[in-house]
Amino acid sequence: MVARRHRVVVNGLLAVHALLLAWSAAVHSPVIDEPAHLSAGISHWHHGTFSLYRVNPPLARMVATVPLLLTDIQTDWSHYSDDLSGRPEFAVGDDLVVANGMGIFTYAMMARWACIPFSLLGGIVCYHWGRLLFGRRAGLVALTLWCSSPTILGHGALLTPDVAGTSLGLAACYLFSWWLVRPSWRVTLLCGVVLGLAECAKSTWIVLFVLFPLLWLAHLVIVRSRAWKSSALQLGLVLALGWFCLLSIYAFDGFGAPVGSVPFKSKLARRWLYSPNSNGEFEMRPTLAKLPLPLPRDFVAGLDHQYRDLEGPDRSYLRGAWRTEGWWYYYLYGLAVKEHCGVLILAALSSCLLLSVVGGRKSRSRVSKHRKEIWLASAMTCLCPVVVLAVASANTGMNHHVRYVMPVVPYLLVLASGGCFRFGPLLRTRVCLTIALAAYAALSSLVCFPHSLSYFNEFAGGPSSGIFHLNNSNIDWGQDLLMLRDWKRKNAPDEPLYLAYFGRVNPSHAGIDYHLPPQFQESPETLAPGWYGVSVTLLQGRAYSVESSDGKSVHCPENAYSYFGEMTPDDRVGHSIFLFHVARRH
Image (cartoon, rainbow, N blue to C red; front, side):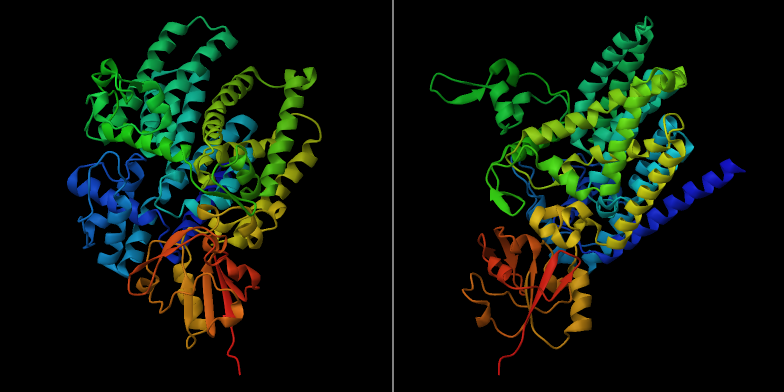
């Protein structure tokens, strides 16, 4: 009976999570990256090529665009290019938006709905991992935190690969930790396939090809296992399956091509692969240039391009300041203000509890040997998201998106559930406190929903204070265009709207009649009467190209609309667009 009620709760949480994602996907406009992902996904299916959006593997966008294959979506490939050093997907995505007009909102919604299973997978893994580590109640807490996480609700309702990569990477690490404890051919095959899917979803997980063997060796040393030959064979199969899956999704295109066919641009690659010739110019070492690529060429070129972007330099924003070189603590700060404070408190308390259990002789003796083995393997796989965080933090050339370290989030959620562990001091108090903080975290997130992309926790002052902390996809990614349209129809149908919008979909496609506000206005008092809408990222001073209602691109220099900072907003749309009203003067 208890198990049955437990399954009902689990299924109920997942169902509610899916409904929330579906709703969010329907009410939000395409964010900046989504038109490019849509056009890239369609090109993979129609042309069998993978040059568009090569900085990320194609799995998530191929899944997203499956429903669109059954529609009459219009495409325009006039800006298509397979140049390995360029990124034409954004121009092709812009053409896709123009070709479909208002239909782009429906197509984006359909593609987003197709990606909801990725988020459900992440919730299922969090539940099973939390239950395995700390018991059944902990599994429910971990699942609740995942299903209500503002990070997951915000990005899980998009067709971008962040949640897909996070969920599949989490599943691969979970299976690998289970394999370390109980190696078997069944788990080996499953782990290899899921590792491959993780590689196909997010290039971040290329580190697993190195980390898994290192973790295996470390585990052998710690447990002093002598059965290393069979486990070595199984590990080889895991890596081979992952590698084969990655090659397969690219249809083996570019596999075995010469290394010299890739125009490496990142400083890291050029440092290792290039050397000066007799003329003092840098060129690839001849011996390396002739070697065959062990991975698809588009994957390698995309990985290099992504790393070059991280190296920068690019203007980054944090706590009201812009810098060309970022901050090493940017992602740590982002997690601290974007994740719910209840989760952070629970994770800290659970860490203290685990240390007391492991360090206490009496409590340690009550923990079964099997659970100790699971704890060890799970703790070792925590190194995977830590490496992702370290690599991202080490590259301060571009600090724009906390989502780059999203793989850290599910580990925090599972750790936060540890207060329900039945061993250790103050069991009843701990369980009540854990459930209370988890409920508080879920409620706080749901109060902000569906504006989850713009969520900031109570430590940071809430979503209304987000403009002070971060920008871009952390608060304003162009997601609230449809809500602005609805606001205009309801609150100011007859007044003019002047709009500076941070996004790649022209507001006129949403049925919004608008004009561009003047730039560098010396005094707000000289503004024409009407409503003025300014995206948070432009209000913070970012340079961007905004579009007029007739589709013309107008360059917006840095601080072009910062003068609105002298005014108090009269209203807001989803925490990402500030609205200012200028009354008629008599």
